[in-house]
Image 1 (spheres, rainbow, N blue to C red):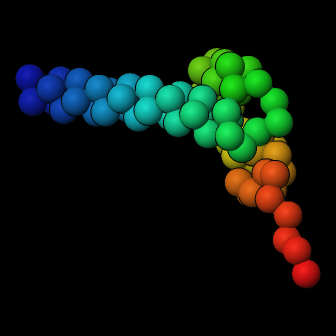
Image 2: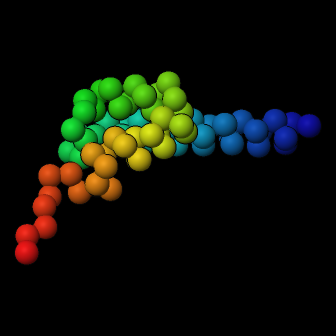
Length: 74
């Protein structure tokens, strides 16, 4: 029984670390790739979890897939 509890603890710890890493990444990425506030997007991910991260990836990066501010010249 202790082995299952230890495995669950490790699993939850890994999820928590990934969650914190996602928050840090969203803040850093939003500072360079989003026309909106980086703090706002970090709060969206903090309170929205996976759905907030998905929203950031779909609409928070300026709708350009990470190419905000870059234009192709012909």
